[in-house]
Length: 361
Figure 1 (cartoon, one colour):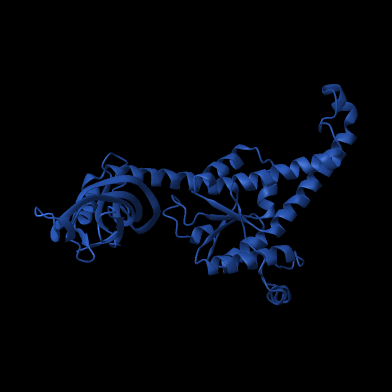
Figure 2 (cartoon, rainbow, N blue to C red):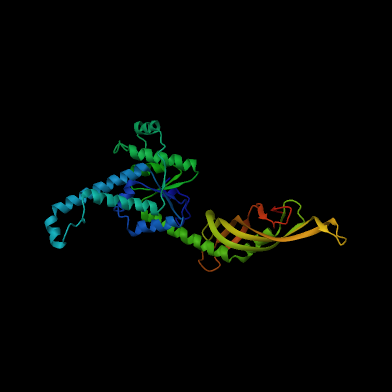
C-alpha cells in the first residue's frame, strides 16, 4: 500500500519498526553515511525504534553506485585539476589509489549497516514468479524499464519475508516502479525518502516516551498488579506460602497499537513488560528424627520456615486514552489485564520440597 493507505495514527506513529531502503534511496542521500539523517537512523535503530533490513542484492547494487560515484568524482577532479590545484594543495580526493578510495567508501557503508543493526533478508524469490511478472509487465517491470530483475528478486523476497513473519514493512524509494509494486502489496508501506521515516520514528518515540511516563506514574495500575500478585498461592500443598513483598524492578513499553481515534481522543492498547521480584515466607510441616529426653531416637512433627524470592516477567495489556490536550493528565488508564503465569521459587535446603510453584488463585 502507499503511505496514504497505511494504518498510521494521523501520520504520528510508526505502523511497523521494519524498514527497507532501495538503492535509489541510498543514492538520493548522496551516499553520505556520516550525514545527520543516517546518524539519526543509527540512533533510532540502536534504541530499537526502527529495524532496518537489506538484501545481498541491494548491498551489491549500492556498492556499484559507490564505484560509479567515485569514477565520476575522479573524472571531474581530473578535468578541473588545474583550478583545484590552485585552491588546495594535494589531491582533492585524498591520498591513495582509486582502488583504496573505493574500499574506504565501501567500508563506510558496511559500518553504517553494522551500527544500525541491519537484518539481511535472504533472496528467496522463485525465478519462475519473477519471469511471470516480467512477461506480464507487472511492477517492478514496465514499458520504461523492462530489465528490473534485481528489484524484482528483492521485492518478491521481501514480500515472502513479510508474509512469513506476519509483519508490514516500510519501503523507502522514489522509483516509480517500486512504488507501483508497493501499491499492489498490502504489507508494504511506501515512503519517499529517509527524512519521511525519521519524522515518523521521532514522533513515535515521543509518543512511547509519554506513555512510558504515564504508566510509571500510574500508582493505581501498579498497585492493582501488586494486589493480583499478592493473591498467588502454592500450586500444591506445602505447609503454607505467604507473599510478603513485591518489588517492581523494571518497566518497558513493548508495543503500542492505536485502537480508536476521533477528533478529540485517541485510545491505545499498550503492552507493558514488567519485571518484578516476589518474596515469600514459606512453611512446611514434616517428621524429623530427634533424640528425646530419655536419650532415645524418636520422630517428631516439626514446622520449618524459610524465605524465598524469584524474579518474574509479566506482560500487562493496558487500555490508555489520550484527550489530545497535551496537558499533564492527558493520558488515562481505563482498563488493564495480564494473564497470570506460574512463578517458580527455590526453597531453603532443609525443606523437603526443594521447589515450589505459585499460581494465581
